[in-house]
Each structure stands twice: as structure tokens, then as C-alpha cells.
Image (cartoon, rainbow, N blue to C red; front, side):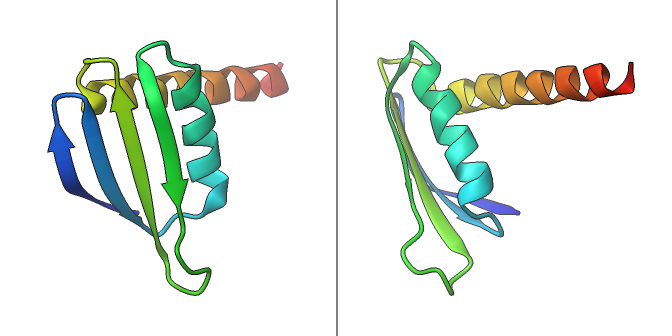
Length: 88
């Protein structure tokens, strides 16, 4: 996966993501929208044959990079919990 920042402001970020599809982006969008500091979280894959997506996140003032990191940590924790329950 390759991530490039296209636009970045104190409450807004637009990322270009190569190498991922709806599987990861839908999971990320869903979890971002559950975060109370997120106002908008959406992604677009302009063409199914081009391996590139765009993710847009707007917050209520919190740094969007910090929010994305926090949400990713929460996703990882949930996956670890699932893996742990399967190991028991």
C-alpha cells in the first residue's frame, strides 16, 4: 500500500491510496464515521481497473492524521481480539 497526502489542513485531509480496495477502505470509513470527532469520511475508487483510491476525512477541529491513526489502532485491537478468541 502506498499513501500520499494530496491536501492537508487542520481539520481536513485528502489521501491518495494505491494498492487497496473496498475491503480496507470500507472498514476504515465505517470506523472513522463512528469516531465522534469525524464530520465526514468518504472514499472513492474512480475506476475498478485502476489500483488507486481517494480517502477524504473532515473533523470537528481535531488533527485528521491523529484521528486516522487512532481509528486504525482501534481496528487493529478489534482484529487482535478476534484472533485471540479463535486461539482459545
